[in-house]
Image (cartoon, rainbow, N blue to C red; front, side, top):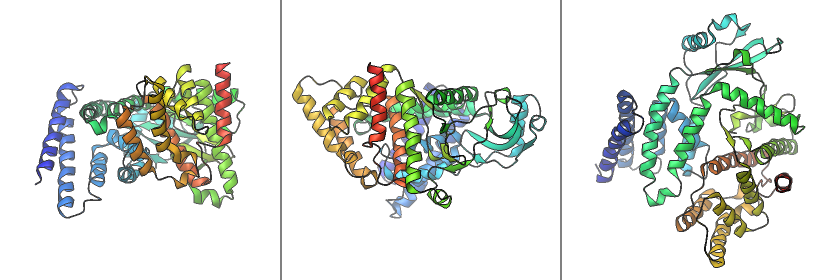
Length: 454
């Protein structure tokens, strides 16, 4: 056994034991289950490595370990899968499997949760409930139903039911992830990726997702903002408040197709130009929310962004949202607008205002930093997004970060994740679109910034 791997195995055990002692005292049994699964993954990695399978070894074993460890780790795996550019490509590709391989809890367990939290058997509250889930995710399962909304009108509904005993499990797992992130933060080549910030943001997001009453309020807020903006083309589901609790969320059912299902979009006769226009409309609404209201959907993966049968754009799942101060909104807007003008000194100064990098002392220092940023990020300013070699760009940005101590704040990391989602949809639906230089989106951001500055 290679000494490096032996040290890794010992380190895994050390992390789990120390996290048990210092990070929220997760149950000892959960600590040992986690240690066991990580050691199983390490053993499988060793066998593949010694067999010469050095390229594929690693991501697959870690992904399978995450799936065996359950909801918290599956959710973290989904973050990796949805963050191309922030994690190595081979891990991003492997963790794509976490997006659609979450087995559902048996219906009797779900029914027991519904009965406990609603105080009565669910069959007495709904005219019909589909026993097979429409979707099964790491946090909850979703079931189709027929019932009445808060206005007393019978309609198609969706029931979102939280997995059983989830809060206790999350508390234990987040503690162990936090300890691991703190150790990684000490490594020079990893520090600039801000693993501590990534896990802290993940912790905030997952606890936010566990609050279904808060999610119902956020859906109402989004729909109110769309009404204020005069946008009848964009919506979120309307919650049924009288049937919703901290663990159960009932809402209207929106029917449509995922924004990344190109085959279904084409089968419905939606042209490439129409698909691009709808994508731009959704992104336009998202940026308006962010810049004008400091409120934005923080998890726009393809399952949460739909082209609805009635022609609207539907944003689903408001478990994760971002909120920005007026100052941060101005910084984000200036950061994005500086790109198409080639003002990388402006990009550098805005990064310093955000606290992402230490302010420079001389104009020459600003120019040098700006030149390196321009060299690394220039591919985003020319051609189409489909032509970008993300591994090459990421490598350059890592080197720039190391030289200048770049460490992006948590809220900006959340925004970047959503831009990466939108980038993926643009490559699928509108390969000629470059969202970083598209005049329609830049005009939206610019006009909102002018209103804030006036």
